[in-house]
Image (tube, rainbow, N blue to C red; front, side, top):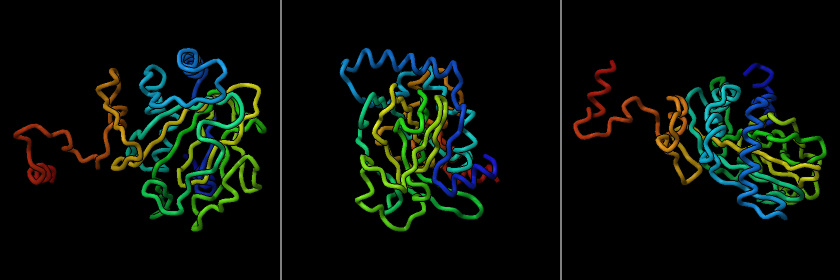
Length: 264
């Protein structure tokens, strides 16, 4: 993550990263979405949210640890200091999305996992999002909207600004071609603008939290997803402080004091 990107993320609370998915990944992901829509959605559907899409396997598993995204998570949350919290995918054909068009998130009032702070030359974020555009999003299509800089606000978002049916001047449309990732902190006031594009909005959300915390009540079990490498398995761990002896749980395992003594 270069100095320009760090500056923009600190300033705005988000950054757009192009080409985080290649053409083959986009094809395979969209093919899977096509199959799921056909199987699960009525023909007149205007919007739908697919939960826990990591369970689809295949190309979804590759994004547990996307090399194009990794440097941004290492910088904004902490190097090797995050876990996959939850994953879902939104489809919008027209109008409002699955949770409407209100701005949400933000760090005020204080919420345990929606925070942004800067200390000792490093930014620290709570729950953070990688939102992948699976289809192009043009300047007036709708989709992701946010109030840049709101992640640092010390005052709550005014109620009359929350509904994006009537867009306030402070809200910015965030766009990009298919394959773009919008990476943002949940301390940012953000939401979904009404969709007016002539094609579906398809957005895949991978949400990550600091390794010792969780927003989602479900924890992933790496054993449910054969073929993962060690980095991917680590990112799927339940919340913990990533201490070295955390897997020593069998009877007769070395107690903490003995383990720490050996490490000195």
